[in-house]
Image (tube, protein in one colour):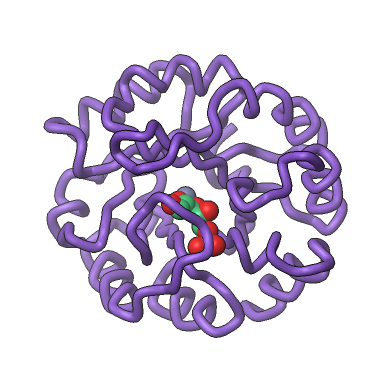
Amino acid sequence: MTWPEWVRTTEVEPSLYAADFARLGEQVDVLLGAGCRIFHFDVGDGHFVEPVTIGPVVLESIAPRVHEAGGVLDCHLMVDNPLRHFPQIARAGGDSATFHYEVVDDVPATIAAAREHGLQVGVAFNPESEPEDVATVAGDADLVLCMSIHPGYSGQKFRPDAVDRIRRLRAALPEHIHIQVDGGIDHETIGPAYEAGATLLVAGSAVFGRGDLADAYRGLVRDLE
Ligand code: DX5
Ligand code: ZN
């Protein structure tokens, strides 16, 4: 599947890291029922980020229901050694892998390595990295992820400087490459991030932190209309 087939111009991506893992399958079904077709899946290795988060075992258990509904799993690898994880992510049913600019010496070669496993590819960067530097090496990627927090945990506050960083990234990247934003996206921040140029908007606690998941997801989608 190619990106144009996945992406309906603009997508709100629920971050499963913020889900209730005792009810994960049920929550995925509710969001599929609400129209969601891209799920964000955060893999943290306990090195690049402090916590060990979720990995291939969890991915494998939800991939069939997501794929049966025509959805995809967009995996954010918050890890030191992405090359080691690509094969596992692909085998477990991941559809894309986004690795961090900060951990690899050769971004184009790492993009190519992920493609060998049939994955769509993203390049993520932290608040300390310069958007123009990332854009220079990410020309073969499908998406570039501008972090609007320091990665590691859901529930952090959106950094206001991310808006300008998204704008700079949009100006520096070829138009066909999607911009994703991740961290602190809610009713207040989704609009400014979108207007700056991000069309893949990851939301963890703004979807899972409230009572009704379907309402929360649809509410964020409506904010973009
Ligand atoms: C954090 C993860 C995020 C996180 C977002 O390191 O990369 O995807 O789940 O959660 P919120 O939307 O609550 O900031
Ligand atoms: Zn993430």
